[in-house]
Length: 95
Figure (cartoon, rainbow, N blue to C red):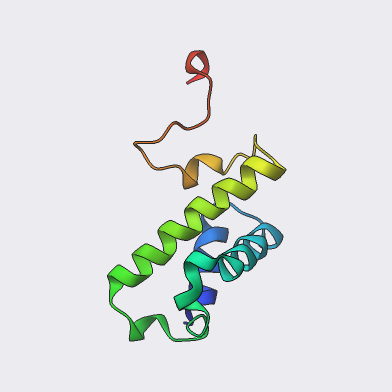
């Protein structure tokens, strides 16, 4: 599976709708911090060490949170993208 498809599949598997997953991929591709990925999105994920895919997935989760927070902050899938050590964005009395 190519890297782009793998990341998109993970986003959808974690609760994003296809259109939101596409927005995340587009944002990742346009982010200067991911410049080294420009020519690699179409590469097979199996060509890279697992750690590279972990880093790519972590970037995708952060970008997903930005998009969720901007477009639909109460999206039910938001918690799937929050690291355990981060604030889940839920007011303290509602956890």
